[in-house]
Length: 88
Image (cartoon, rainbow, N blue to C red; front, side, top):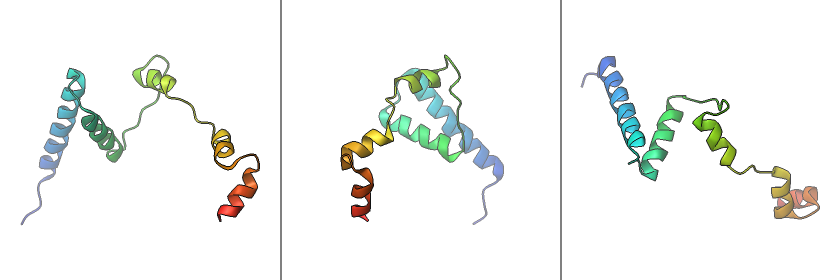
């Protein structure tokens, strides 16, 4: 079986991307569609920068911040180092 031409891969890439855009823009995208679209972006090394006022910036503002020290304190108590060494 012969390999597909590069133009076929480019066409498929374009069709998949267009379909994701259509679903998201229409508001019909399911959680699974959004997850798949995020995976598609990651697979294709697409990243974004959260410039002030952009949708990505607005999303970043509502995502709770995680304090690693607070997480460790709640998991292991006051003596974090001793609790971590005991787990090893």
